[in-house]
Each structure stands twice: as C-alpha cells, then as structure tokens.
Length: 384
Image (cartoon, rainbow, N blue to C red; front, side, top):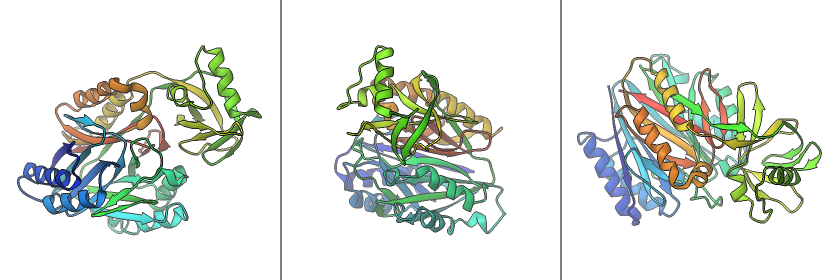
C-alpha cells in the first residue's frame, strides 16, 4: 500500500518554510519519514536553507524537485510559495538520480541518470516510471527526453517538466537531496507492483493553414514559407483583428502559440520574443522542415489529462497525483487558472495532488502524445 502527504506554504522565510513543510508531511505520514519527497519552490526562496530544513524536519530518504513558476496542491495555490508531496510505500521503490552538465552534453546527463535506475538491472517489479525535472533553459529538452527513452529502451513511463523561475526566464534549478543545481536534470525512479497513470492533454486548435518551417536554429524560429516568422504572426494578427506589438509580443503570444504537426497531434511551442532580425525566440526547439500552425486556445485540458491518467490505473484507487501545467497557461488564464486546479481535484474523486507551473512539460506514456511540450497539462496518478 502507498501513503502520501501533500503540503503548501507561503511563508517567506526559507528555513521556516522548509521546517513547516517537512514537519507537516512527516506528521501526516504517521510520524514516519517519506521514502521520497518531491518539492517545488518559487525562485524567491534561498534554496539551500529551504532544502536543508525540509530534509532535516521530514527525514526524507530521497528528495527531488525544482524551482517553479506557481506552486499548488489540491487545497492551495500561490505564487512565491513552496509545494511538496511525500510518499511511503511497501509496493513501490524510489531512487533519486541527477545528471549534470546538461547544456554541454545531454547524452552524458541522460547516462548519469539512467546509470542509477535499478529497474534496468532487475525485473522484480513490473511497472516502471520516472519523474523527470530539467533545466529547460539549457535547450534541446526534446532531445534529452529522447535520449532517456533510448537509454531505458522505452521501458519507462516518463512525466514531469522544466524548472521555472517565476516567469523571469533567467536561471532555473533542480533539487537533489539538499542541493539546488542549475544546468542539470533530476529523476525519481518509481518501481511499482501497480501501474502509474499518466495523462497528457492540451486544448489548442489550428487557427491557420499549415506553414513550412524554412529556417530555424534550435529555439529560434527564423522563417515560415521563406517569410520572416514575425511577419507571418503580424499578418495573422491583422487578419484576425488582434494587436501584435513586436517590442511587447507576450500578450499576443499567450493567446497564439505554435503547433508542430506530428502523426500523434500538435506538439505546442510557446513564442517568447521577437528578435531584431524578424525571427521569433521560442520556449522549445522547432525543427527546420516541420509543418506548423498558429494555434488558438479552447479549454478543459487539465480535466481530460486527469481522466486519462485515472483510466490507466485500471481498478486501483488513486492515492495522490502530480500535476504539471505550463506557466504560459497560468499567465493566459489569470484567475481562471483556479478552475483548472478545481477540475483536477474533482476528477481525482477525493485524492490529493501537488504540482507546479513549469517551463514545458514532459510525458512519455503508451498510446499518448510523448515528448517535451508547452501549454500542455500532464497528470501522473499514483495508486494506493
């Protein structure tokens, strides 16, 4: 059986916040230390003080987490806060791992992580999953997820997201025990007797015919149909009666993202800025030769992702969930983002959840849209 405890604090003092969360989670686990503790924290905190305090108070055997851009549980949501979930189980085993030097060598970072995966050496537990949190600002997150998939021979379900920094897009960290590390990725391996449910959904629809990406450079989208990318967006804004300011494009980009066409559906990419040469800086890679659309939002992705995740745990009762949604979704929806959080709570039928707003979302689940995403809800359900 698996036990869980979730916590949330808006205390500004990092040591006090960590102590409060650690004590609360241990108390809710019957005074026992969690086998695994997952922590999401605003960049406003002193990570070293926060992590030392939460480990000391909780006695956590393994801790992973990341800086974030909005922190929540089923009962609380705030910016500048900390959220956490602790797990104890006699039907699951947990192992933390870190891969450093992500920007310089994604292959090495992925190998550092998977070298610590016990499920690659043993088959005694049938279900394998891993929470992955990465410094998405290092770039090429899609390729990093692909390398993890290759190194694990596709035997693991993956879920998680890119670390945040309160929508500053300057410097992000992942957490490994008492360390806060930039330019790295962490993993929590979950080996289980029971299936872990992972749901992946977005609710965006094409608003334009397809464009061919005629030139790109990683996260820099240079031209579409041999026209500077910013000119294409400007023309679409005019035709759809919207305002597009090249010097302040975020209000437009939050409602008009990029959808990369794939056989499984549209993989979203959030535009962030217009460069002086008319190219557009994106939150994730857009490959040259891709077919893309400008996309418009609908609604209901969080609820749909939760329902899908619940279906995958078959007849098991949900114990707790981890929920990742994009910072761009929060910025676009404003106060209405609370409706997304409420929808997840209702779908979970009384089970708790914790999570955060991320810079991109990670999912690899059988029969679903896999890879690194933007503006997409990812929900992982852990059974009792």
